[in-house]
Length: 236
Image (cartoon, rainbow, N blue to C red; front, side):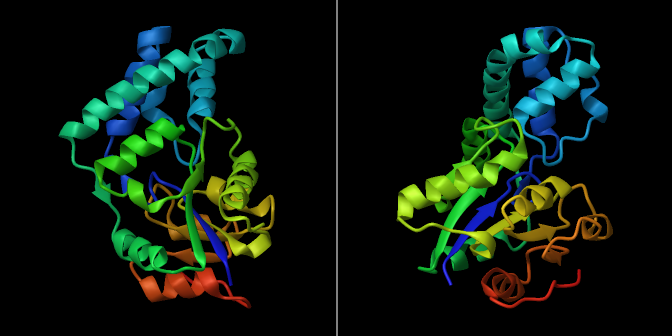
């Protein structure tokens, strides 16, 4: 019954209401002089490094030039992000605190993150709402630009931390985009999709998550989905 539960951040735990995209734009513009078509770009479920390549590639920059400046651009972005969140309220989605509290009390559970944010960006966002203390480990956009690589990273770190080798449906990936569902299928992990981000329930259902919720407010139902050994997908 042990579970490694990996939460996405943006759209799943919280929403920055534009502060993240604005900070990202400023970081790219500082280094490259452009942020590409950032205002119209879908950020959902993508890693920070992948977004840099997509946006700047769309602006016509060659890959080697993008890669040469990417660390500096992300560092600039993080500085802008921290300043922005000091003055802008961050919205925590309904049910998140209650769910994290229940999971944190459960000795069977190891809580972690699986996010496209670089690790420093994840810390800045979670610290802004006082949720940084819940998560014992994470896999991040600085570990790989490809989100499909991140479950294996988190599982390896969890085993190093706990001494337990989590496999298959013992690993639960909770997120709000098709990318969260897709990366969970790589190692046959349990996927819980939630329609609190930019994708509605009908769109997420098409990617065949194990469970689907409109929100994470129904704490007992979400916990049942996490812990069930023989399970049926929950309708939204």
